[in-house]
Length: 250
Image (cartoon, rainbow, N blue to C red; front, side, top):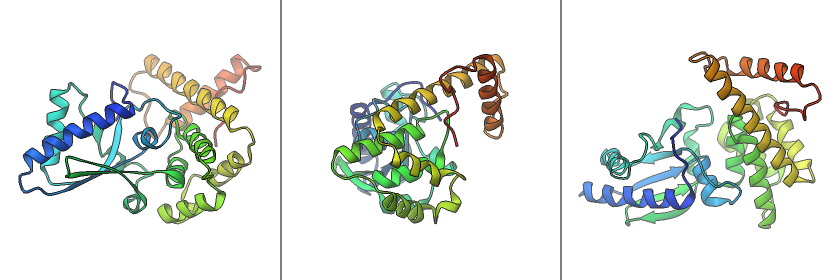
């Protein structure tokens, strides 16, 4: 799902703090809870190249009162339904192993522990997901940039280990994922590459939104690739000298 508002790191911290306070109040037995943030929320907490995300995907281990705590914060703070959700479990990037490779972030109200996914494990997830209309590839480049600047560069070997840890090897990822990450790692100008992919993803998203406006209820998950191929071909036909719009895909 996608929320109708953008969440920054400070907003995520603030809302999770409120959820924890309410959870502690509702859950009188004091049962601890654990929330593992996935995707965009993890990127916001661990890296600086993105300003916001439009949903807070998570894996939640808690008593049933956690749902009530989330609903309370949703209502009292005017947040969209599902702003904190486990829809990620329905995607191909999900694996229960993720929790085993998560990183401690902080504890709220002494009862809700928050963990995140970072480094090569985030890269592996993004390679598995690979959605042309999301930030998946620009996120990979951004992660590689910041890891490099922090003095902890991600090598191919580290990424391959994460792919194996989470998904049992490259053969279970999209066909060209392995070649894609090798190509990115070989690129000497990650700043330019990040900008190129970010622009590419924005163009794809805009094209899909325009298509959806023109043909409501046509776009589905199972026909998205075919529609994108049609839109790319149409753009090239209309503007063959354009700057490779919507072509950097695998």
